[in-house]
Length: 106
Image (tube, rainbow, N blue to C red; front, side, top):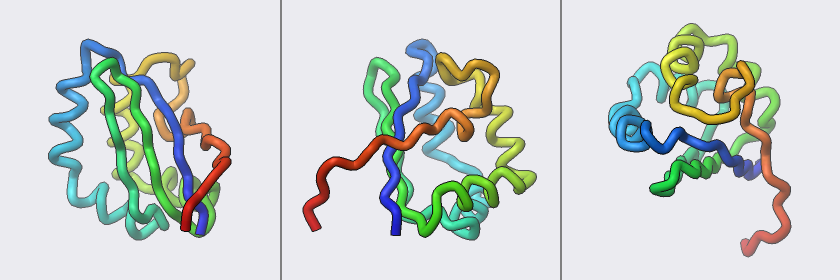
């Protein structure tokens, strides 16, 4: 099982709306994430907009590929794209760059 951690930056003027949106993630989005291999998925958001994501999956590249093929993800990505800084035209999922794990206490 891969443990994946990534960082993104939410625009500071959108932090509260981002929190509200994630307090009510669409049920079909949650189902798609589970079905495509995103497990134990958490997002942590600092007041300045720093977003830390964590998930566990068998194969992160495959999980992203499967999720990208869903209609609900395309809708979600379109709605979420304007919340982030420095996406360079990418969808938020495409901007996820996993951090290198340097320590894990099992």
